[in-house]
Length: 267
Image (tube, rainbow, N blue to C red; front, top):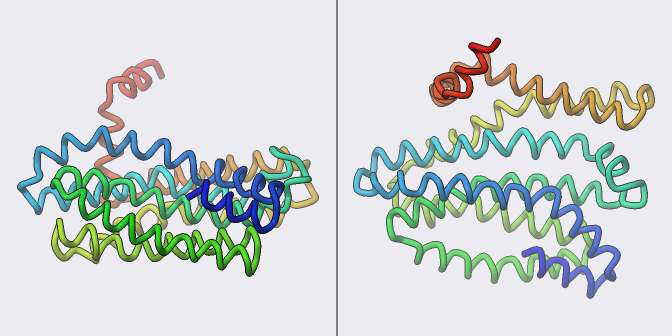
């Protein structure tokens, strides 16, 4: 996807614009692409062991979907709202034009991140053929979306085309890849995505609000540090206060880990 997007932009607007798009892509989309497959590969054997128990597989798949979201959503939503300060501080003022591209790609990265566990599910059920066919369909959808977007609105158009395809992918993934394997469970699918978004919402609001209120009152580096620290704190508070069964289960497992026990004893 990134190679095709870059090629389209290079042909339409030149290498400079394509380079800016690549920079934003590497910040917002590549890290989740590197991290999430590790998580899903680790959990694939567990899925394979319960492949014949559809109900147990369904429950654990949606737990994994939520956990992947909890890992990715706060980081990407946080990056989206601090990008106005992040880009000029980290990359320099000359790259300020990529800020809206980066913001849109944060949403793309967020949606792509929750698609990774589907691969492990299909492998566990020996249905990778579904994924292959769906990827072919997405390719035929992706090409005209970014070409038309690039011709109409340059880098923003390409990014919007990418985002549109990703939204369609997120919606259709349930009907094309999840439902045939796990049966009807659309409500669980939506709720598994809603949980990480809900937990990340204070991070988004707090970081954004501080960016507006403190703009011009603090140096750029200090403002960004305050936004990030406050966003992280807001997310931690949400996790600590949450009574959602999955979050409670994760906290319980975390507190039972040997390293955490050693840390608590040392404290």
